[in-house]
Figure 1 (cartoon, one colour):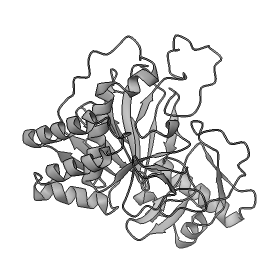
Figure 2 (cartoon, helix red, strand yellow; figure 1 turned 180 degrees about the vertical axis):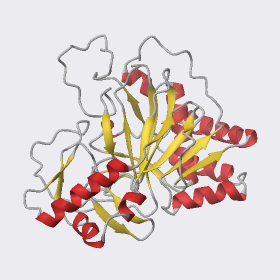
Figure 3 (cartoon, rainbow, N blue to C red; figure 1 turned 60 degrees about the horizontal axis):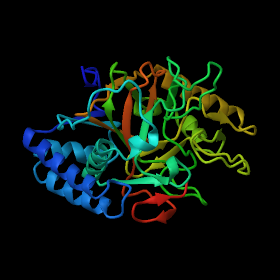
Amino acid sequence: MEGVNAKAGTEILHLTFSKMQASILDHGSRQTAAVGGPDVAGAAALSACQAKILKNSLDDAQLALLEIFASGKAAALEFAAMKVPNVGPVPSELADIDILKIDPVTVYMASRNQILLSLVDYRSFAFDIDNGGMQVRLVGNFKGGGVRLLPNELNLHQAELSSHAGVQLGPHTEPPYNCSVQFEGEHSPAPSALILSARWNPLQEPTKFIPVRNAISNLNGLEALALSSKSFCFTRSDCFVKDESQATIANSILQFDVRGDFTLRYSSYRHSLHDEANHSTRQAYQTLRDLLDKEQPYDFLPSPDSALLINNCQALHARDVIKDNRRLLVRLFGYSPDARPVILQQDPLIVRG
């Protein structure tokens, strides 16, 4: 079954487009793609306009789903029954990433993602230190680490922990982990959301995601306070521009948020306790890890006619090691209207990482 598995709870919303709505979205996506897609000046305004047209065709129940997500009360929103673009046959192997980035189908799918972000009033953006400062990100095994070796991959190659490789990625929110809404110093907040869709997924390999509201609600008051203290460290993402001069800075994992009640920044493989963290904080950290381990992960089977919008402040996502190196996802990051990043360029939006 494509999409999210049937056991998904109330925090996971499903919006299914009618044929007419799918046609409106398809037309709008083609319009944005025609000007070059999200990484071109003017595309964001055009996508917002296309989203407004699409929104006018939605019924009250569909609009209510958008409002729930926009209010920060849902972990994910699945969009289904979209028109399938002409993705072409699954290749024998993926082309070079620089070729795929400018492929018309990639630009179309990224444009569609940008319109879907605009439906909940989110704006797509890029970090200056990641993905070459480009908004459109391809998620695929370009750097090795999958079950099968790439043609130019050596057996002893140590693949990086990133979405450009095929390695397993444990439960995490997207970095950076300095803050969630308001910038701190020179650091912009983590993405409010990410949206992804698949061009090719031959073996129906899922993206796993884990709502965390239940785990957070099971913390006691002192544990929540400890997790909101700056007592935690994280390693820099492998796909960020290297900066050996950057000192280790302690950050919090949990923050109160007026819109969604709380925000979480967490990685099962990048976070650690600061050396000066006290006993209560260490206990709270272990309790959080134990609670998250007990949460039921849900499977989303990415496909060309669906997209998953994940609340990066209230849901973790993960994946197993890539089995078919031809799997290719198209992804964008989004900021909510409340997010206050350090803006380096307004259009297309690029922020300091």
